[in-house]
Image (cartoon, rainbow, N blue to C red):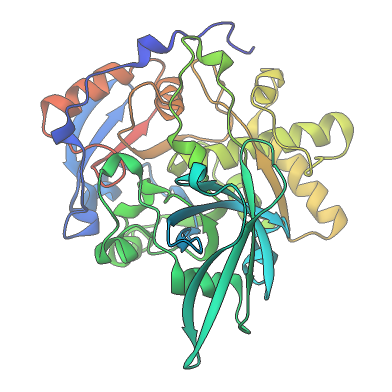
Length: 402
């Protein structure tokens, strides 16, 4: 059942500024690794994670790619305005919007918004040796933010424009501007689908060499895609976390990935909280099929919807329903969105283990960790703080196993 009340003050801790990792380590897999297994804590190095995993595990990754979503533009007066592209509005699909030529419209956060009430913004760029211009004007109001209509006079896509004009949107808590190192290190080595404005940071620890060694030792890999939104950084401001409104994130999962999940009960290790949100949301789509015959993928997975699934229905049953639905209709994948909130009391049906970094105080991600560890987050974080672990996006990692 949905929790009736969550006192967010119980999910607070003192995070000294000096414990926030401002930059990545020189080696992706050289970070420290905290291993929590049934209440016992040990310490290792991330490159040795394979020795702590169950036999022949399935590692599930979020293969989204961070786009260069921050664009600096100017008013005719010269005033500088920053536009942070959050998600496509028209076309509403990520792939089609990033492939758009000439014009598109995005939901955005506008820096110095008071200085831009109306009129166009502009920024110049060079394409095929010729000077070109991209302009921006305010679109109609959009729930939860503003929309911006972009137009440009070059035969290139919006995705290509972002590569030319945009900056990588590193997290605000790093307290610095993005640098050259972020261009590669704020992307996972397996990223492939453009759309995120924040990296699925648990995956930043995996190098190509480590992935090869894991598969060589018997691990299997699967990929899902969830485009991480800026809402992932929103703190819980209400004293009662059940009143916190979760953001919506879009995801896509292939039928092959669903079948992989079906084949590894008890050994499914989610790399990152975004992967957990994705695969647990699949369970809701499966339950919709069992009860109504249709996943209604156009309707987001509700914030508390998973809590309505009866305890006796297993993850295997939910995934089987989803796989059967895709097979019957000849679909190779399913696209949907989710507002799922995983908090203490949540019943995990598909996630058996979790690789994750150390999260901000009073965050929904910390609630997820508490839910997965049965409330033992304080012991885990106390150990990390007492033993020199680095925190947040570029920080160290943990492996949580039941």
